[in-house]
Length: 337
Image 1 (cartoon, rainbow, N blue to C red):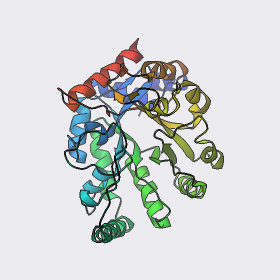
Image 2 (image 1 turned 30 degrees about the vertical axis):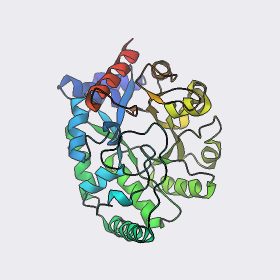
Image 3 (image 1 turned 90 degrees about the vertical axis):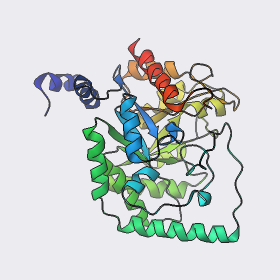
């Protein structure tokens, strides 16, 4: 229940998420809404393999004072009892949408080479993928409901669920992905933008409409100002999960004009700092990505989509939590000024 004062603020356009975050902060719980902008984190990717389970992720998110999160499917499904795909058979890592990373590997500065699998490994991979699909098609939503409660009781909202949908998946698996997102309380399902496959984005949108959940399409260095145009024109259930670091690296241009044009269709943005001309990931403030300016644009224009911290630069002489604290403080400073 909201107080009379809070209802008055909502009538003036103050997002409910802001009110909830400030309630949490008043109780000593995490609160990462600054200047009306919800700052979150993508997990487990941002923790660079130092937090892999849903429980570990929650502990670290709370320790950072962050009150919202985009969760990738691996820890969510493991929590719910899914059979685990051996990492050796996982797809090559290419960022938070590229599958499970190899244990112990450092974050890549460029997409890694594909690992060739033997015929036996390919067959084993297909068999394990079939086991996972069978599990998904019979999985009850009770464990996902439990996970949502666990996060919310700690003061953390799950605003996005990341799971890639492909042509090879049956309709029932599409239903499963959107059902999990909805059960977790997410407003959108995130995945990589399918490459030149309008039939797939149209199919995804139909399931998004069915479940009332928008699909937010992520991009890497293939970004252009018009990259999402076809998917957005297909349906209002197709949206943009914009990575501003990749956008700068791929276009050598500021993402601000894109955000201003498409803000109503953006589900969330990823924050990282990269240099132009496909340059490397950099500690925040040392690259060419206008992170501060984007956050201030969101504050000034009262955009309600979350801004998601993604730690992707190589950590040397430090540790991921120390660097993530710097990223959190960067956001707070940009939005409190």
